[in-house]
Length: 78
Image (tube, rainbow, N blue to C red; front, top):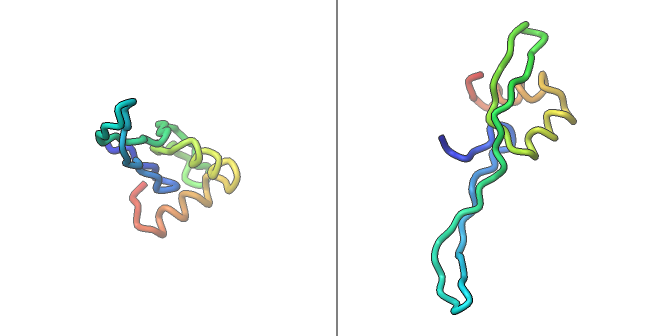
């Protein structure tokens, strides 16, 4: 599974690991992805989303109904 947030679209960032001797090797910064279950009262069912910590805050702010509507408008199957 990819480290990709379904709500915010956050994905890994890439860069260099730099040692003390200044040698550079590639590395990645993964977002803090959590598998969360939310209850949709309008459909009387639960949904599981792969969301980042920022995505959880967005759901708390806007509400799960608004976020699911936005995801469906963007073509994501839930």
